[in-house]
Image (cartoon, rainbow over all chains, first blue to last red; front, side, top):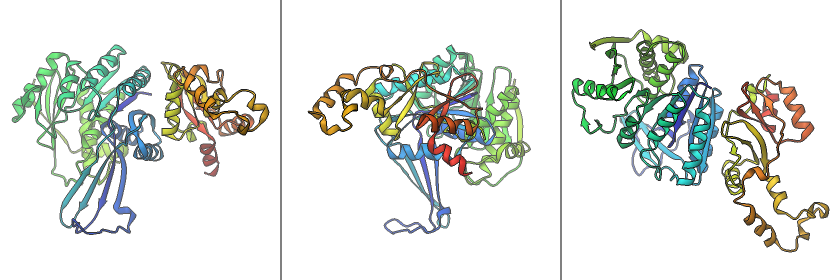
Length: 318
Length: 145
């Protein structure tokens, strides 16, 4: 097992396509292809994309209730390359439901609450984490922290991974991100979709992003990846700073999970002996491949390699 | 077909120092009848099933009587479970269990399950870590393919 992905608060994603969606009306759906159910959550998504790239991973997470069982079953059924290790709690796993109305061009979302994780279950989870970590080369930590779990949990997890010489990739936001950064993970890809404030600083211009990334490098982090103006990625290491751009304007089918596809592509490069620059190219190629499809699908290695031809690089400083 | 091709790739297990109560909750929440028992490095060191716990809480003479109707008071069973619920699962697991390797054949897995009557068998990888479980249903499904 090379890769361990950690998702403390996974979700079952349901997307229902309804033309002319109207509040207060009954919408009967007779076409099963209009309903899409998929396990989600940052670490889980990375595992799904890695499976498409032929890389096996262990997905560790907290699930609960009937939704949790369905989530687990669906993941096992659809993804043979993913080994699961879930801690079951009493409360229901989160469910995110989206109603997509293509005719009206709207998306209506319902995000249900996730489970509460008490100290006893958190301790059990950490025990599983440490046991699995000892066999991993790369550990991906992503997503929100469930109710009841201290916000510095990712800091503790990264410290543990460092103790075992495991490369850590972190994709979180808000206060948990601030705590995670303090533990100096190997790679940070801050999730700034909700708020563009990182380490107390507001990010507006490209210079703000570069400065923020360099501040993290000074702390000992090896690589920082920022999504910049949605379609571009700023990638900073102690040796170089590049802005990755799309060479051609392409029609996006979806933006859901592209950040997670990026991490899967990055890992693909790293496990194949590529340096950070080349691995970042694979990352962006995987994200582009995902963007060109409707659901979480990058079309395997072929799809990702196809995405490579759209990756443009601009070196913006040394 | 090899075991890796049909096993359940799930390494959910119970740690040796987890309690009987935690095991019961884990079984109920996951609809499982038993689990591999692992140490802190995910080496399989035993197996524990619902039956192991039932046998532990029902008076030993019941095996001769073949009916729970002979139990003088069900509170006895409840009391016994109360007594052991905080004990480590290692007190009730079966040690020295049969395991399958990911490289074993479907036939050898089927033989083991039929011969011993196991509902599930832990599967270990090339480094002897837990890699999943082979269940009766997963075996039958593999035979259907």
